[in-house]
Image (cartoon, rainbow, N blue to C red; front, top):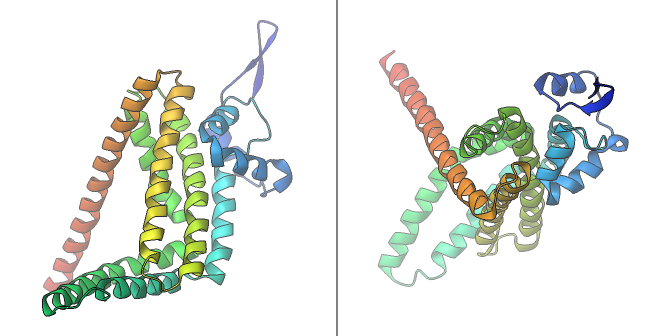
Length: 266
C-alpha cells in the first residue's frame, strides 16, 4: 500500500486485515505470481516475506494463496498415491528391516516386539495421516502459528507476530515442497525395500533442518542481526518450538484420557 507523506510516496507495510481482504473473492492465478512466489519461497522465504510485507514486489503472492495452492497440489498427489498405501509400504519395509538379521531366538523376540510397537504407533497415526491426505491445509493450520510464535519469541518481541506468521507460512510451504515430492519419489522407487523408511525419515529430518536454516537467514536479513546473534536466536526458536509442541501434545493426551475416563464412567 502506498500513501502520500509530506508530498512523497511512502510504502506502508501490510497487515492482517489487508491479507484477509486480498483473499476474499480472489481466485488462485498463476499469472499473478503463484509460480514466481513458489520459486522464491523454495530458496529464499525470508525475501518473499520482506517483498510481500513491505510491498516491494507486487508479483509475490500472499501466503494464504500459496498454502491453498500447495494444498490443492497435495490433494491431487494423494489421490493418485494415497497416504495409507505409503504407510502400509513403510510398515512392510520396517518388517523386512526388523527380521532380516533376526537369526537367534532373542533377536526374533526383539524383532516381534519392535514390530508390535511399530504397528501400534502406525495405527495411532493413520487417522491423522488420512486427514492430512484429504485436507492438507490442516497441517498448516496446526504448525504455522506454533512456528511463528517460537520465531517471534526468539526475536525477543522485536518482530511483529503477523510478520513472523507470514514468514513461517512461506517456510512451511517451502519445507512441504522439499519434503513431500522426494518422499513420494522414494516411495515409488524403493517400495518394500528395507531402506525406504530410513530414506523417507531422512527427508523429514532434512526438511525440518532446512526450516531452521531459513530461520537463521530470516533473523539475519529481516532483523539485520549478526551471524552469531542469528544462530543463537535460531537455537532459541528451536527450544521454544519444542516446549510449545510438548505442551500441545500433553493437552491433547490429557483430553483424550479425560474423554476415555468419562466414557467408561458413563
